[in-house]
Length: 174
Image: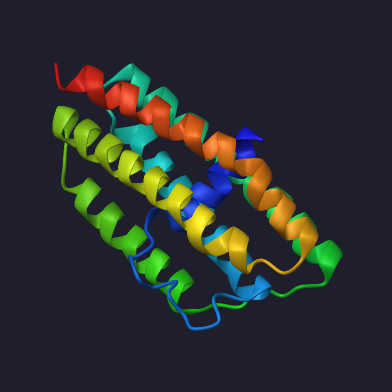
C-alpha cells in the first residue's frame, strides 16, 4: 500500500492547481499517465537527494521515495497492461514533468542544509497536493473499478509519506 501511495503522490506532487480542472475530468488513460509521470518525478528527485542530502534522515526518506514510487510504477504498469489501457499524455502529465524538471534544476544548485530543507519542503507540498488531487479529481473521475480501487488503496501511503516529511521538516526548523 505504501508503494502505491507513493506512486500517486509522485504523479500529483508537481501538479499545477487547476490543471486537472477539465470540464469532463481526466479519463482513465490520462489518469494512468498522470500516475506514472508523478511517480517518475518523485523517483528522480529522490535519486538526487540520495547523493546530495546532508542529513541521514533526509537521505533515508529519499531512498524510501525511490523504493515506494518504483513499486507503484510497477503496479500501475501491470494494471494498465492487464486492462489494455495505453496511458495518454495530457496537459497535467506534461505539467507534472515540467514541474519535476524545474524542481531538479533548482535542487541541483543547492548544497547541505539548504538542499535538505528545499527537498523536504517540496515533498511536504507535493504529498499534500497528491492527496488533494486523489480526493477531488482522480478517484471521482476514474471509471474503471480496479483503477479506482488502486487509487483508494494507495491514499493512506500518501498520508504516511506526508506525515513523515512533516516530521523531518519540523526537526529541521529547530
